[in-house]
Length: 201
Image (tube, rainbow, N blue to C red; front, side):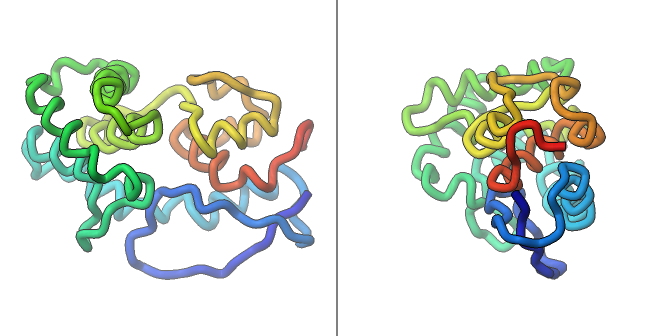
């Protein structure tokens, strides 16, 4: 099963969302083809967004506020949080009240566990927001995921390859996906979920 190319270009911030690539009859039928296309189209395109979330000039409290508010430099809500925006202030309030400091987090997993514990206390929020907020704060703290977190579209993509779970080792995926760091593997699975098939090589 193949996927359609597009020639989208632009210098504005490209959100790390899950608008999937479409199936089509182009000549990209292998997993390597899809990963190569992902690298070309997306691997470097999120740098501006990452710099926004990970701005070292922000205090820790300011970074927490930015991550939870989920707004880009143009003031628009990140697409992942568009439908849960009204619940985000509750998450922010709890996060600030918890009074956690950067030294409390030794790795991304401990950071994600904290954010997830907040999400679990706020009705209306779920695993996508937990991962997104943790990733944004991880950029500020220079903590990157070493595992692949599966949720929503990412889980759909992984299931196409016969992989399921909440958190999965990168080494469990085909070698082509292993060539991506965990963050990009998560994004690839979401973007290309409609292009993946069982036993794809």
